[in-house]
Length: 115
Length: 114
Image (cartoon, rainbow over all chains, first blue to last red; front, top):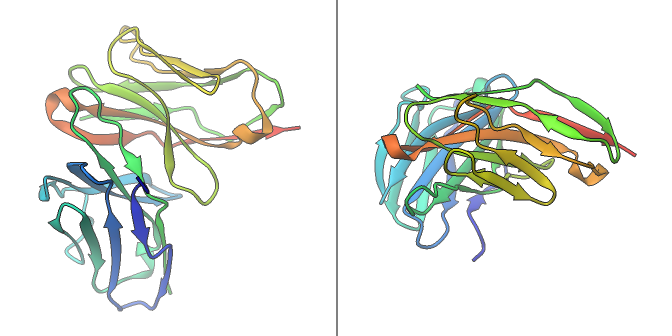
């Protein structure tokens, strides 16, 4: 398997523009997670899905952020409008339900810069 | 709620030195515990894990033991190499309480000098 695939790897956009980050989880995995990493706040969970259904979106910082998972092989995280404080590395991860085994596999991340 | 506390870095060691990175946690029930490693410009990779008390996770010379009595999961390696330079994250998952998402510590940067 190719692992979790995220695109783009880097994104530079101007404040106020819409940004869409994409993620393809590992085939067969039933959980998908979106995390944000910054120097100040470390790794923060934004939202996660189980079988394409959002389970917990309490980490989504504002209404400007939205996430969807239209099918088992694709998810998007959208920021509209973007602001400079949204600059961060965004990670997608997936995992498979297997009892106590909750290991998550991470993508390479998308480095977002909002200028 | 769940939380993980790690020792602050950076930790700077000479090659072949002994490594310990402390990690303690707060959680209800019986969480699973993990160490992830992040190399520059990359995503997080699982280093090792333990799913119940007294379990020892090990990989690539790294070890950590799940100590429920002290709520700790300290990472150790007997002899570090320059290639071990990275950021290490301790994490937990409250799978038994329905909280499957990983909760991470703040990360500890390790720098190994030749």
